[in-house]
Image 1 (tube, rainbow, N blue to C red):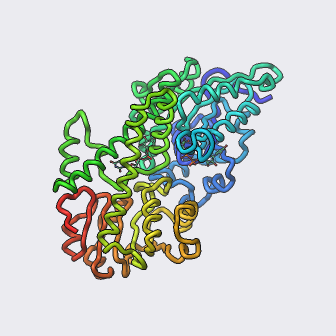
Image 2: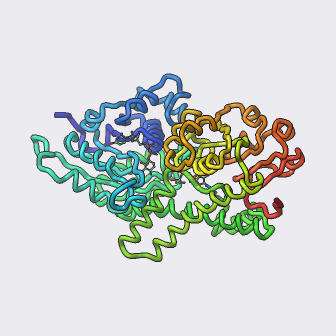
Length: 480
Ligand code: UDX
Ligand code: UDX
């Protein structure tokens, strides 16, 4: 029988899932709470060995500032291990931070979250936990998932240990970190939200955050409000991106400039200036999935108008990607066959190596189906990652595999990636792409040369002065 301290404070915590959320979140908790022992467990041994890598450049997640934290706390009070059951047994508090992708088949396919990993985690906790354990939902989950977890944890008598004191309480503590700024978001959060119905458990989790978060930033609510707050926060953010992208299309049609319009809108303090950058459509593992979940929830409660309202945010996002692709093909005389196109950026946004749902994926598929040759450049995404991602999209390709391999290239040096290109498409807002020597680039490209700036971050005067045709999202004076 493992000795557990059931009174304050929590001594040992465990996090199931060493991903983009679990890894950085637990690193910051360990850094801010030196008296806590933090174990991050994962069923994927490769991922764990990467987290334990001596060379900090090989950590599986790139986040500015993360490597320094890992250097300070790893193997002191932060441990990455595949010993899942042992970590569960010893933990006073367990965070569930496993992936929750959209179901690919069965009831709710394409809309509802696949909860198989959450359920598997709950069952494993039910089998191996001892004494009283607080279970915290960190993954973004459909509303009322806590109920499912609670039912699994409390379902069977055999869950009780020989002293009959195996008990659980479930909390929701959604993650609001954005990739690329995760460490800052965790160290200086706008708010921490804890949902639950057991005041003692809520207080215990609150005590952990109080090590570095001011108490007025820690909100408590019931479980369902907490789960719903996460889904709707992401839906609101995604809606802003679709709103500004819709304005970008209006600007192009009317002669406005989306950057000027966004500035004017954002200076109204009721609106605020953040999250008004036009782009190739939002990506990442959360926005689309969370809105789909919200839409599914609305349909279940027969709130069809509400479901359609949120669905439109995704429809607009898909349309933005398609209209950019159409524009590229038309500009290149309707023919991409054997043309060379350089794609600057494959990550879904800057400062991350994450490519999940990146707008670069759909665009690459569309361009490859036009028979273009693609040369990729990204400061943090590897060639292997890009190839793996595109191979997973096999079913979307009209070309056969062999052909595909001959069409994909990767070049780490930006200027080399541009040699003899007909067009450059800037997809990810990496800072290094904003300081390029356009005259040098113009000399390297095939004429007539094109730049498609899907983020509106390039200095248009410099690009045009170098003799390159430029299309910038949301720039109204564009003439083909
Ligand atoms: C998180 C959230 O959990 C998800 O709900 C949210 O929408 C996006 O962010 P993330 O950390 O980005 O997910 O996922 P990922 O990087 O895929 O990491 C999940 C990890 O959980 C993987 O390493 C996987 O191996 C691990 N896992 C999965 C387990 O350890 N056990 C399981 O049973 C399932
Ligand atoms: C998001 C939420 O911001 C975060 O709070 C939540 O916990 C997880 O989901 P993330 O997906 O990591 O974080 O990145 P985010 O910065 O929100 O960007 C999402 C997408 O929207 C990216 O593709 C980004 O490029 C795009 N975006 C964002 C825009 O196109 N324009 C903007 O103004 C802002």
